[in-house]
Image (cartoon, rainbow, N blue to C red; front, side, top):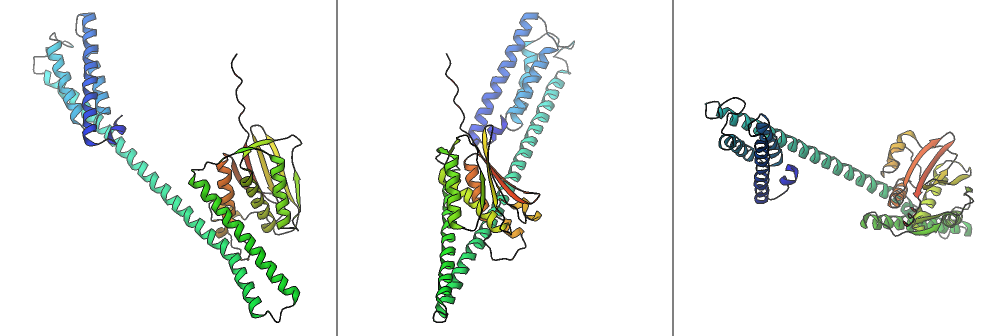
Length: 369
């Protein structure tokens, strides 16, 4: 309760604390009078009732004042409402102020503990917020480095090939000219795909990780992705295994197709050899898993913990000119998460594999008879 009060303006904070104190003390007085009316005598339980409600006041209001005032009220209640000796002593004697003193000490102690706990909780929350912001900033910096790295590679290729063509146009054979133009085309095509991927991620994040889904055939989506992969990389051999059962999943077909192509392309470009790639679809209870498995070099150990934070390319010491896979995996992770699925990567005995899962549509409960 005190945590909520601390978030209110000063006037409302004290207004609600006053109302709460009056209500709790009124409840303590009513219970004590009811108890006294039933037994027609005082008892040790009456001070305990006030002490209990005093603890509630001290732990639920702001500051020390309300607990001290309610302690004085409780002590006066013993004097005014229960004139008979309480616990065998006469309230009119000098021992009476001790009652107020004890209750005041209890109130101050409880208030101090509550304020201390609230302060510690605020400090912990502030620390967690700072750590979260630092983590977000670190991921943002990694993403910017990954984007710069992945975009610089095709742009450098386009610039270099264009310069070679312009400076040596008269010296190049027809085959060399076609090869240079083809390289420019491939780099431009890859650059366009990367920009589209980035725009997709931006759209998903701007919409608070929500997307429009519809029931799509897994076989059709996978088939379209493999077909496009074949056009983009004719030398890539893919062995697909899909269940015979007809599977429909709620998804954005274009985005899941994009995830599939990204993972297949990563396996083809970074496996280090031309071995066929396995693509396995399995229906597992409430979800469907999609696994891309290659038989190459595997994932370096120092990259396993950074696959999806945008820094995987920096974790590698490779200096080759291949397009980095860091931003592509971030894009895949974002898309799969927006579908309420999961994405993971690991090494197996003869290479690496990435698996993403998508949930099936929950079946509606049958109407009650």
